[in-house]
Amino acid sequence: MAEITNETLVKLLETVKVSGYEASENAQTLIDVEARYLKDLKINVGNVINNTQYLNKKEAALLALATAINEKSDVLKKGFTELAKENGATAEELAEVVAATSLMNANNVFYRFRHFVNKDSYNSMPAGIKMSIMMNPVLGKEFFELLSLAVSSLNGCEMCVTSHEASVRQHGGSEQRIFEAVKLVAIIRSFVVVLS
Image 1 (cartoon, rainbow, N blue to C red):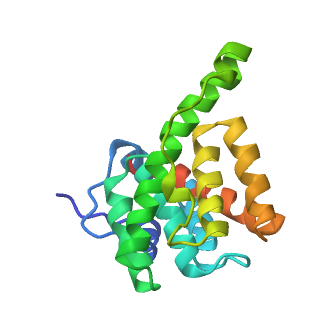
Image 2: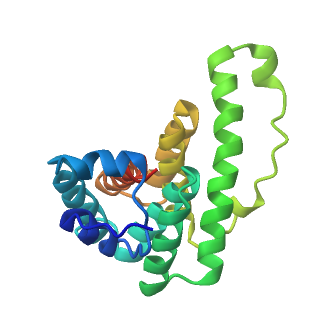
């Protein structure tokens, strides 16, 4: 395994608790030309993880973890799990992030289909998808809905985004908090692209 010597990427990986990373082809392409984008990415990731105004550090780490799970980034999943634990996340909360991300993947596919086809016949059929974890979440209803909104944004489900945005607001979440959460998952997804 070749050691990464690009100082910007090394510091970025330290910020998100990633060690032992071997540069992907995408990362190496940027490293080879000392791409300015790595500095932008370091600033963007640092800001959404460490400088949030409407999310606490544990919430930021859990949203980043959901993104890593959703985007199948084992390297970031490990790092964000560690970061979440350092900021007080319990085993139950970590498990709920996995469960919520999995559930949103089912819902996002199903409701995108309903939305795209838009036939009364499909819209009137019961979904039949068990969602009991949404009733009394360990993470609290507002944050669970915020997490669901963030994952739905990643997966591009308009119906789910609209529904969960309304639910976050109904449970006391501000538009600034929603905006910050969606920005966070967008930035972390861009980080996954570089590391993959």
